Length: 289
Length: 113
Image 1 (cartoon, each protein chain N blue to C red):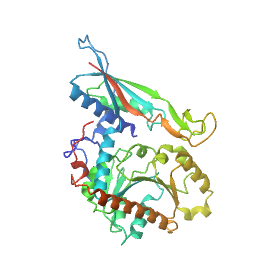
Image 2 (tube, each protein chain N blue to C red; image 1 turned 180 degrees about the vertical axis):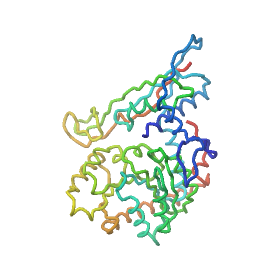
Image 3 (tube, rainbow over the protein chains, first blue to last red; image 1 turned 180 degrees about the horizontal axis):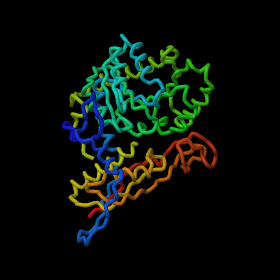
Image 4 (cartoon, chains in turn yellow, blue; image 1 turned 30 degrees about the vertical axis):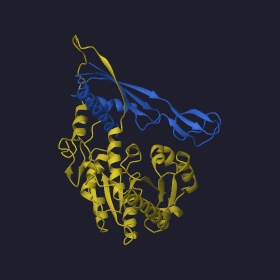
C-alpha cells in the first residue's frame, strides 16, 4: 500500500521503486489462472439480504486524483499534455525534438510511461530535460495516481510545460484522465488512415492530432485527407497538425500551439493567485472511493 | 487490459461502502455499462472474479445492465440510437452526431447480507 496516500496500486514502479510493495494485479491474475472456482453456496444464513444504492462512477477514484493533478498544475502555471499513440508512432523522437527546439523559450519536463525499461527516459534526459520513468509492469495505461506520485519526483518548476508520454496503446489510455490540459494523439503516416475510426474512444478524447513522419509520404499510399476526415468524423473539434519530427516540417506550428497553451496556463495562474495548499498532488486529502 | 483497473475500482467502491455501512458479505453487484463505454463486459466479468477472490465480494454475482448508445442529431432535432461513436443518424444519415448517452460505467447498487 502506498505510504503517502494509503492507496493500493499493484505492479507499477516509478524510477525503479515499487509504487506498491504488494503487486495486487499480479496476485489477482495468479489466482485467476487454473484454480477451480470455489463453491458458492451458503448454509442457512439468518442475515436478511438488503439492497444498497450506490450510483458511483467506476472512474471516480481516478477522476479525483486527476482533479488534484489539474489543480496542482493550475496553481503553478504549468501546461500539461498527455501524449497518446500506438507504439512506433515516433512520440519519443517528437518529444526530444520538441524539447531541443523549445530550448531557451520554454522549459519542458517529462513523465515517461512504458511497461518496462527506462530507455525513453534516458533519451529525454540526454536533451538536458528532467524526466521521470513510470513502469506499469503488467499495466496498459498510466493513471492519475501514478502521475501524481511521479510529479513529486519530477518537481517541475512553475510556468513550465510537462509532457506525459503515455504507454503506447490506442485503447486503454482513453478512459484515464491524468489531469492534463489536453490529450494529444500522435499518428504516423506508416499506420492506417482509418485508425481514428478503429480507435474512436481515444480520438474522441483528444484535442489535437499530430500526423507524424510526413517526410515519408512520397513512399507511401497514405491518404492524408481521408485520415483527417476520419478523425473529424469521430471528433469534429479535433485540431490537426502535420509534422515531421525528424526533418522539422510543421514543427513551428506545433511549438506555437504549445507556447499558446503555456501562456494561457501562466496567465490563469497569475489571475487566480491560488494559495499553494500542498507541495505535491498526493498531499491533498487521502482519497476514499 | 484496463478492465482489471476498472474491476479494482469496483472492489474499492464496495469496500468503502462496507466500511461505512458495516455489512459482512456482498451477494451481488449491479453495474451499468454503456454500449459506448470503453469496457468489454466479458473482460469485466473475468477481472471481477479475479479481483474479488478472498475479498468481501468473493463469490458475488456480477449483474451488468447494458445502457444503449444514443446521440443528438441536429437534423432530426432529437436523440437517436447509435451503436458506435462515429455512426451516422439512422433516420437522416447525417454525421457527426453528438453522443448523449451510453458512455456510463457505474456501480448502481449492491445486494448485501
